[in-house]
Length: 131
Image (cartoon, rainbow, N blue to C red; front, side, top):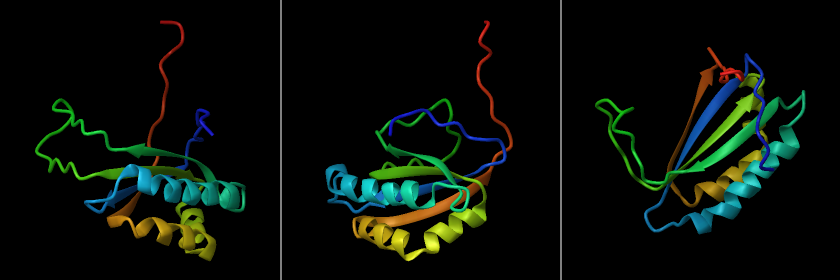
C-alpha cells in the first residue's frame, strides 16, 4: 500500500483535483477516497484495465514563492489524486464503468468541484548513484 511506484516510460498521468465543500474535513472524505482508490487498484490494475499506480495528496497550505509566477494561489481545501495508466483510453474505460462511478459519486457528495486533466510523459529520471 505504501510502496514506491515504478512508472514505465510512455505512461499517461491523470491529475485529479478534488475541492472540498467549505465545512468538509479530510476525516470525512478519507474513507470515500480510500474506497474509490481501492476499486481502481483492484478492478483495473492489470493489462486489460491498464492502471499502473497512483498517489493521493492533501493540500497542506504551503505555496512556493520560488516556483510560482503570476498564478492564482487558491488555498481552498483540496486533494490531488495522481494516477498512472498505460493509456488515456484505459483510464476512460475504467471511469465509465459503473463500479468506479458508484465510488466516485460517493466522494463527489463532499466536493464543491472536481476536475481531472491528463498528461503524456516527456521525460523521467533519477539522480545518478555515484555522486
